[in-house]
Every structure is written in C-alpha cells, then in structure tokens.
Image 1 (cartoon, one colour):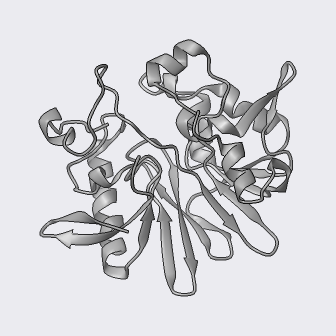
Image 2: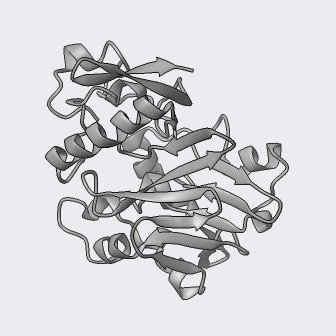
Length: 255
C-alpha cells in the first residue's frame, strides 16, 4: 500500500499484522436528492471464497453494504445510479450478486457509470493488473443493459462531477460533489488513506506512480486552496479529512 516508503515509517501510521496485512476500510458514498439515490463504489461484495478471504483478510462481520444502506433507509431497488471509480475488485465486487446460478446486478433499477476508457482497459487487462479485474464483478452489468460508459471528465448529475486520473489505473474517475458552498471529493485510490496525503506516499499498485505524483500535486493543491473535504475510501479510522499545504507537499487535517 505504501510503495517505496520504508515499513518503519508507514507502520507508525497503520500497523501491520503478522502476515504484513494492514486494516483497510471499503467506504462507499451515498448521495440522495429529490429524484436520485446515488451510490459511489460498492466495496468487495460477497462472492469471494474462503481462500480469497484468507489471503486478503476480508472481514464483513461488522457490516455489509446492504446493512449500511438499510440503516439509511435505502433498499437495493431504491438505488438509481452507481458510480464506479474503477473496476478493481475491492471497489466493484458488490456491483453483482448471485441470483440462483446467475450473476445479476445487485441494484436492479440502477444505471452503473464507468469510464469508457477504463472499461476497455479492464476487459483486456495487462498482466500486472489482471488479478484485480474479476470480470464476474462487471460484465453482467453490460449483459443486463445497465451500463453507461462515461466519456471523460464531465458533470454526471447536477452538482456531481467526475474527474479522471490515470496514475493508479487507466481512467479512474474521482467523484466531486458541490452543494451550497461545500465541496467533497471522493478520492478513491488517488488518496486511499490519510497516510497517503504526502506526495511521495504512493501505492505500489499504481501503474504510473509518477503520474500519480503529478495528479496528487494538482488535485490536493486545489483541495487545500479551496477548502474541499476529501472522503477516504480505505482509511480504517478517518472517513474524511481536509488538506493543508506543508512546504512543497501537503498534510491531512483530520475532521
């Protein structure tokens, strides 16, 4: 998760277990308006087997996405739109579910929004990312006719914009929400945890880490200057932070 950053530094932020795994959240974002119920990312889902769960230490005993939605008064059929930042399994695994022997969209009334360029990237993956793109998580969306392929950065809905970045994976889309003078940025894997705010703290997963560096510098600079709140998808403790400049880099201000 921390690339070239030495373990004695990063483990001060998020300590590892005896198998060198660290606790991570899979935090989704729910947006509601008068006519839309929008879900941003859907976590890892429940289709994995025991071997997969053991390798990654998957633990859903505290809450599942369905439970979390129910606590907010939302049922799967109420969701009108699902925005998938990208198609790595920990972000889109919950997009499909088993219905008997068939894999179907988990949210039957929803349109699923994915970047066109990223869709092509995931359907014909490079060897380095192939294990992260599990096609059972996303091909059923196209079969069901519930897929919208988004063309670059754009306003998806009123007050909801997608911002395309390419360092982590090709054409990942961040979700920027503006409402009454407040701006939220769902930072996905550009800034997965508060520990990743300093510019050199970049995941080894990233396919183009130097591009990630450039994208972080640009986007975090704007976030610091304009007072945005960043929603952190993977931070196990902090759901949201603000950003301050720290010399030539940045630091997280905990909400």
